[in-house]
Length: 134
Image (tube, rainbow, N blue to C red; front, top):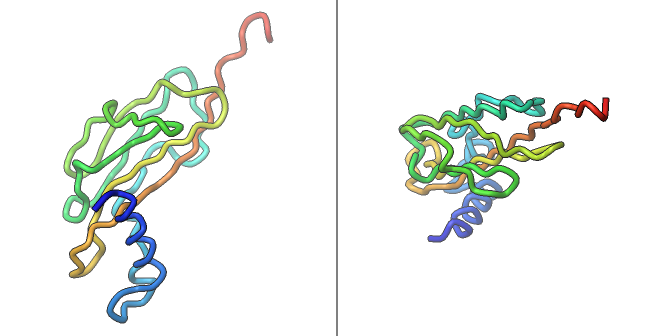
């Protein structure tokens, strides 16, 4: 199945539930993909932003990890292991930047399906004021 099909299936499972399972149980467990750094709305400077993402190795498919900065794929800038990914991004634009992370993971329990988890963090980049602008 293509990624969009998996995304749609994950959304359907979230809302409807399967085999009598409650919607709360089926709701995508965010512990499958956790952004540990940066925190939401972090302000960063010229050094860029250090990113640390953890995922559950027993459920997540590490090779499917993707990272995007303002819609551009920056996955190649990350070191990816079986339980997480680490990288530093310098290509930030002045103002608010969107960091998005995706991975395919299994739902808790015995269900065999993979669903796509997506997490977004916004970071604020403020370049230094120029000498002639201060």
